[in-house]
Image (cartoon, rainbow, N blue to C red):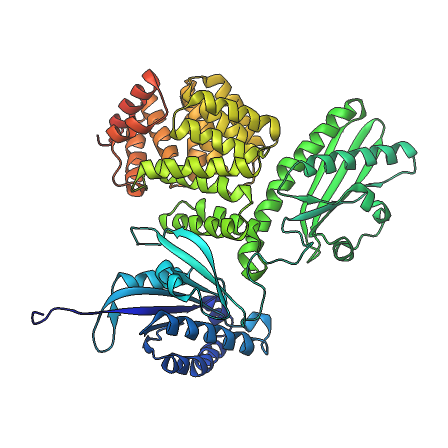
Length: 586
């Protein structure tokens, strides 16, 4: 070996990191530093006992190397077992848990450090471990399958940050580590957010008021029950809760629900007022309070309007609130549903690091519940976004995977509106099979008339077919169904696109700007906005939007875009010409 050549060896690399360290430090720096040092004094000697060498303990992390993957895995199991025991004596808010990743790789080393891709993979893998858990690469998993007390769960190929190739990963399930693994919820527990709608109170004793109030509640329950995201208690279970005093916490405990909805009905001189409140049964806090006014002559229309507003306003807010709750609570309590919610939160941020993390979360959801259709649907959605954003290193592979996962979702739930809609969108947006797309999108609308994505994706396909007016109507309906969702920017963008195709350039600009306010990194929206601005002669503003697009997608080129866009004929050619006029390169 020539003088000065780097020293290399094949080692097992263990990377560990404390979960929520910033939060712990913010709450009490002195206590957190002391607790970490106390834990390290106990767990670091384990590295030496298993023949390893501690490379770094900077900040809240641990990096160590081992001569074999068996040694590294046994050390990781001991660390997590010891930490589980030590945490038992601490309050939940002060418990310190590690995520651990293990990889087998060829590293460059000197007397104090190790370097190389193998180290980076181990560090990235630990971010996918549950608190108190371990995730290993495929190379490690192959050698530990017979290790006593340890089982492996295939998480599929993870797209790790700053790692060009996907890495096959496995989560360890350890017999000696206390606590239920992610997804192992007790039999009978409900992973979806659950709601009870109580009988509405009446301001008068007129029996007609009671019947009317009961009809309102029936409509609300029927509308909410049509959403598969929600678990709704039947009205028969609520008849004993119609009194004047409502203890939402007690009702939540008795019925096993997270949310309690209740309200009141007032009638006077032909006028009707209905008030409703949605409360968090865990905290007692009011999540949403609304009032509806109308004339008795339009009773049924008012009933329909109330039910629609409940579905389109409360249900999306419940979903968003559940996503935030899922991000805060201990992941060991999360189900595949919770993982999908986390993934959507990451996906819709539309920065590459968060976006990559979303795919791993979806793969974990599929691993924990292989029959859960939305995980597959959103995986297909992820691959579509990856191509649309210009982030795909292999567009053909992403198209194939999008088609595969979209089809897998329908196999698992043939009547699921979301699965049907995303499958249809894959057919039009990626494969340009518009006949199949229309068939599946129509099925999605029939299966889920309140599915916002079905309406919005149907609008997109109508636009690709040149049906501008229909595209506008369907996009507007999709947006009405999704006014508070975290991905409202997508609905606004498709409405902007529909107006552009229909020749309403001022409307296209207005909705494109709204979408950009909610998310500045959606490249398809920036393209439509730039083309619309050129169409009305605002070339300077279009050029600025083009610069924003290139900041997100530096490799964008018009020739490649023209080849992949589902826009057709003269619409496509004019669109490309306008993007060129905005300053985007060929």
